[in-house]
Length: 236
Image (tube, rainbow, N blue to C red; front, side, top):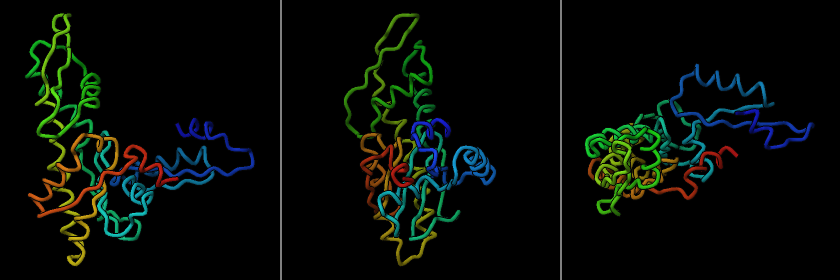
């Protein structure tokens, strides 16, 4: 993958090639070393940084900020306070895109009797219709039952599955806020950045704010404009 990226960048023979690679906030030392080793075979210099840090760096939000970076396998939470985040500033939870897919699949098995579908089909449905709003357009999907396409209403399933990631995310935010300097906790709570592919779920920023109000007494969440590329912008 790295070789192909470098090839597409078309560097001149006399140019040095640098790589900045984002890794999950709590990736193990062993995994980080493996990434560095692979990269050094192709590039002249390589730096590894946590993905949520890269998001905040790209937006120049480096002081008293919480970053939520929702990926496929993990959601990374990172506390920024003017320096490179340390391990104590970061939490990784498995409440992310893949977890929503698995939860939605279980719900559809119950609400779509006899229907046959794969996890990839479920993922495609989620990416097209995902929402946590109380009121959403009906989600009607056609799934094969004994080979015949059959319509099913999975509106409630979609909403419920998407909402499952909210409590663990807010719980993680609470841990990072509670262990921060008390003088700046309120400021930190009101400067939350939402990024990553999973941030595209409709209404998610408002739903996280509502859960923060309930559990933490308030908070403000800002959805970044280039949610899928925020980390890449920061790396660049």
